Image (cartoon, rainbow, N blue to C red; front, side, top):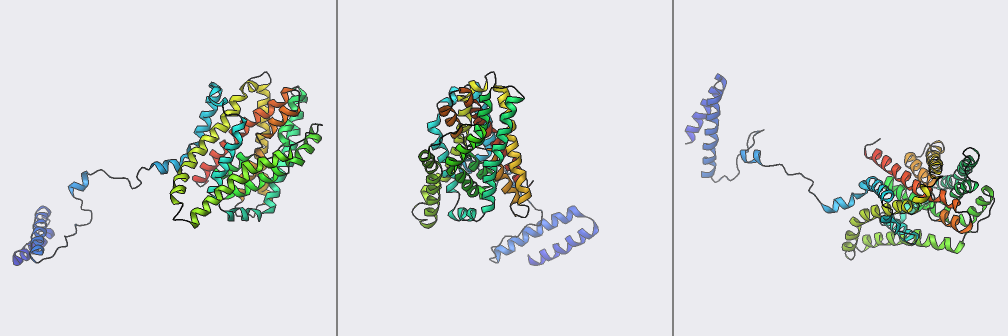
Length: 398
């Protein structure tokens, strides 16, 4: 058998050089079969490796299986990518059928924001907040944007509404009131979706503006509107504790316990984490749709369209100035783009709870509450539109 194989190999070589490729192929196939028999007879168990590019018929007809298998957990974790579509859908639904959101009143708004802060805390660490406090210049820049840039814009557009568009004075006062209140917790969540590493810095900025609003907001309202508005100090501190401090601390604590006691809490943490993104998207949709549904009559009023345009111009100016000014002062910062986006959110968004509450409580004219109501809607829509644009830009490397 061995001598026959030798002769056949010699013949196949001669056939190959003489151009008889079909015979050569048959000869090589016969040789391979013969050699396999010899290996079996000699106790050699390794199979012969096929030539490069060889593919068995069985493999050629089998469908390819994707390496990334479908996972419901991955879908839940990536549900933040659906946020722009959900926000748009909630906006349309609130306009078409307001009762779908009118049940989500102000008493639910604070717990909803607290849940968003909890989600941020779970995905952060105390080291992130310590690093945020090491950037006093950035914190000060956010404070300037909140309490100097935005009030100046509010005064400008408030005066424009009265002098150029002949709207009632109460409308101008409402626009100015919007510019006097503290930052929005929604800006923290927007920053978290766009630049997660900057979320602690955003939280520090908003917490500082909220804590000092008990002194700054009455002073600004006196300067711009001519009326000193008393702000409940105890209620403001309680709001900070409920909406910011407690949920973030709980998230950080759960994150730390999951790290330290990895044999005790992994099941709980692994069950919670995939559910946070879709629940956060749902809560954000409620936070956008509810103010629109509740205030749809104000938006559709005789002054609604003009107020809407003025509020859009006000917030757009705040977002733009908040983005470009840090580019001049923090050019050498390694994360200057992320810092610009963070300060843009901080400057362009304000408390959606404080301005309407002050308008309804301290002004007899109901028209004063119309600009804050419209501002709550447009601030959310414009802010999360920027989230969509900037998050997509980061994903594509732009």
